[in-house]
Length: 308
Ligand code: NAP
Image (cartoon, rainbow, N blue to C red; front, side):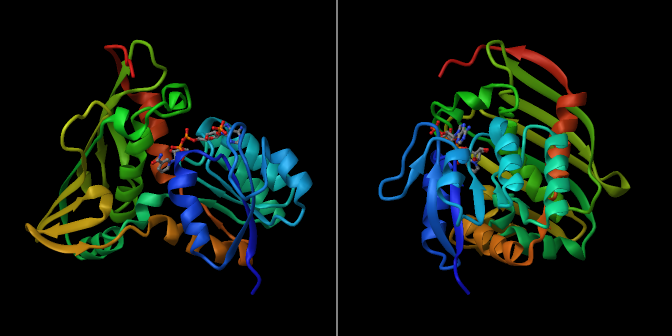
């Protein structure tokens, strides 16, 4: 089977750190070109926007959108209008209705649309789901605390409306719990802390509820210095499961049962190829809806300005 002719749109940190190496290692793809307003990729045709790129390269079959969430919808729409398959970085858009519109378009045109959740591909997520399946869950505590200055240097878009602030990493935790816990999870309470000079929150606490009143607490904080936490701690009637390091390590009752090298983006591209060949969609908005609910119903407090 000939490789899928693909372009990357938005050549920033995640495109360079993860997408380019994953594509280079996967014979199902040929990277034809990239489009990014300011960045170019050495040795690969580079264009300032998707319109020019698709005009110059009609052979492109699929685009992978690694741009900022605020511009994702217009670019994805344009790609679908041009009959290209689309893979979306997380979050899949800036609003729920944007993504609903893309789903309709992709279905009408029989094109692949993949709303990716890279954290769901972390090594311990599926083992955790399987371990939990036969047990009664009593409580869940999510602690996702990282230093924004270390992980998002210079990313002004995160602090602009639609950039999600601390929910940019927080949605990764929500993508995991909406995969491994029984559904539906509903938002009961949320407190969002906005720096006085920013449009998005720097920290948030969420209380969710699962079936049977299952209590789920989530704490997200971008102000963490020292040790960083990407942990999900789950008490059951038959032991305690700890997912740590963003879902790549699993402990049961203190004993490590899973730890494996990172294959998150390799797995995402492995999933996208059959979606393209079979013209299918994979769009799960459970995590995105919880974030939207937190913005809709959460109480707000104003905290110290964020100075990078
Ligand atoms: P980033 O380093 O700021 O890169 C974003 C890129 O988007 C910029 O390089 C910019 O290109 C490009 N862009 C902006 N407007 C565009 C447009 N109209 N057309 C094409 N490209 C455009 O941010 P990032 O960290 O890579 O994050 C991008 C997305 O990936 C976010 O949704 C984020 O949640 C997700 N993600 C990031 C990470 C991570 O570790 N950083 C991990 C997983 C997922 P120019 O610089 O050329 O203007």
